[in-house]
Length: 90
Image (tube, rainbow, N blue to C red; front, side, top):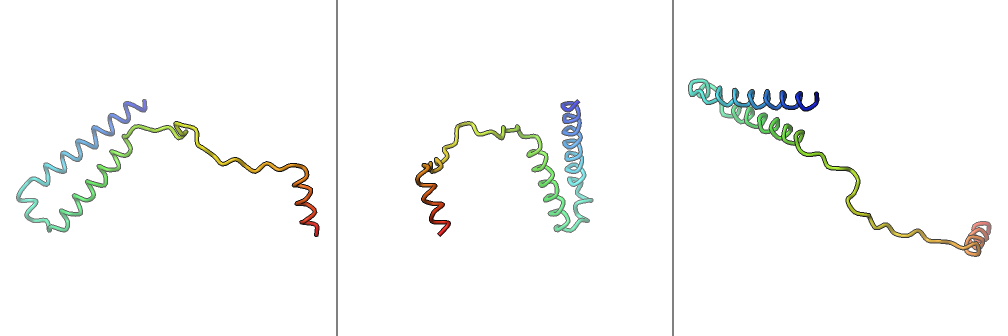
């Protein structure tokens, strides 16, 4: 179900982008639009394309591939912890 929904949505997105490009290619329609509107349309299409590319990329695992080096915690002895408690009590 997820694969078919994904393929339908990608096909629909590609079709809509193609239809928008063919509509903008009409010289009469393009001549009536100001250049800032054309730039806004192109920027919006670029953002939608980037979002679709990011959504369709391969998922990467969240676990690291190799073991991370972590610093060792200091190990205390009973004598050093007793000495620490005496210093805190004073």
